Image: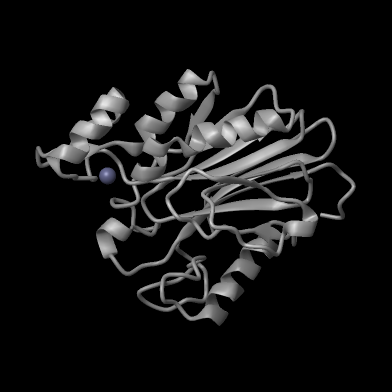
Amino acid sequence: MFYWHDRRDLPQGNLERCFTDSLSGVSEAPFSALNLGLHVGDDEARVRENRRLLSAELGGVPIAWMNQVHGRDVVEVTPDSLGEIHDVDAMVTRSSGLALAVMVADCVPVLLEDAEAGVLGVAHAGRPGMLAGVVPAAVAAMRDLGATSVRATLGPSVCGRCYEVPQEMYDGARAQYPTSAAITRWGTPAIDVASGVAAQLAELEVPFEWIAGCTVEDERLFSYRRDAQTGRFAGVIVRRDGSESV
Ligand SMILES: [Zn+2]
């Protein structure tokens, strides 16, 4: 179920962060097995069951999902708006007992938290989202909600040695974020999207934890680059303030 998982006690309640893997779900090839994306051609009932399994693993919390469009828009999620699915690439919330999810299969899943202020966020940063600034936009939205010391967690994504791009795309990324310029292991232009996100976080003075892992190289993760038709794994963050039963 989990590629990486962490649960930490807070003065009141706890904070749970995770990145799912592709194992132990009910989807069949080429989505086997824990596909969480409804938009990839998988059987809807199986995806909903996979989402239910994930929620159960997190103690039964409701999970907010996005319809991701590679943009930089952010939406605030409340218990009342939980059922609405927005065309955005970042969500923030002040609610406890409500999980935020970001889906990926090579893009960078970013979890954001200021546990003390009680503000959480997630962002979906592929190459377009990174260049458009979706992560800085999410951090700004959190600060608007009262966050003062945001911390980030970057999940596994396609690495710079595996993500080949055309020369002009490489040039564009390098001009904006020099550290995102990379070379594939076979010596052609590449982009390291996670390094670009890391540079943005550093600029904003947001400390981050980087969960190592390349989606293309690790079969436990879904990778669009590797398999084209495939599932999506997720990064999820949830805060509990102790008033919930879970
Ligand atoms: Zn790689």
